[in-house]
View 1 (cartoon, rainbow, N blue to C red):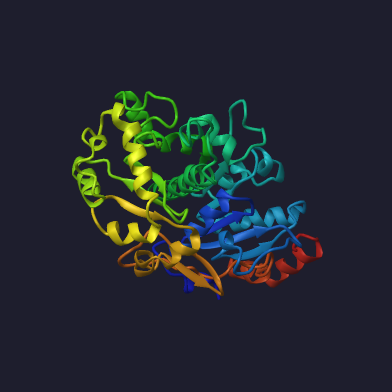
View 2: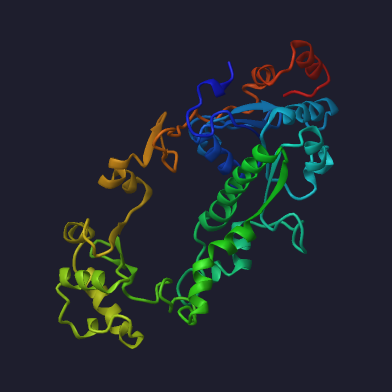
Length: 382
């Protein structure tokens, strides 16, 4: 039985083919699956993996094809005829060399949305160069804005791979799907991490334009330069964050801390007062453990939150009340997001073992037993 009959979420009925890759493309496929799409993962024969720990591969079925086989390529093109979206994250030209590029795919299905995920994009001087998240955000100006004065700091791979990559790919293919359903016209979505990461910097571009991002890294309003928008070490070596940008929130914060009359706190936005203000905050927060500041400031309008690791985040009362984290077969992970009032998403299943559903998927997608047997005999299946 096709998984779509039991899928849960607003994208139920949308059929996605994902050609297995790394990082941002699988995350996008996970997101679409969480929202109810039927995602079939095209894996390589004899690949390893699968199971509850492989979070980014959750929620889809897997078919294994030997894409060096003409029969397997023909079978993938046949599946594209009934798919709504294709996702691939290879270097430019790889899918074309396999015979599965956009030209062939859109000839097979003119309404198909063909989503392509790369770091540098499908064209440009760097299009064929190797790279990773850190390199992509370095070129956009995003990395230069993150970290202390002496050195940019890698912000894990959230800003590039998943923020500038996966999310823009998801928005792109869903926008193109809307267009295809309205007009019958499919198209290629070129989602480049450099494009998305640069786009995410829109607020910084605006601050720069109005003269509020003119200082070196670590000296601006939102990069740790302002002492009322930063993280501070506590007596137990844990950290807290404060983000009291607005005057009324800043006043509440210093009232709660007993610093209302302190000379360093009298001119919030006078940068000349910031060194003394920072020293006062450092000394204050270092005087007590994190739990003390949680008791004093949590839930107030002081714009406060403790800095938590992933285990502590899952146990935080607010996060637990919202069910932000779930446990699937002993593996803690984030629940589907965002939330829908009528068609909530769901984790459809744990990650498949590569090739686990090959024959079932082919039957569900219209292949006869004879066609499946021919693929086996020709070495097209894993």
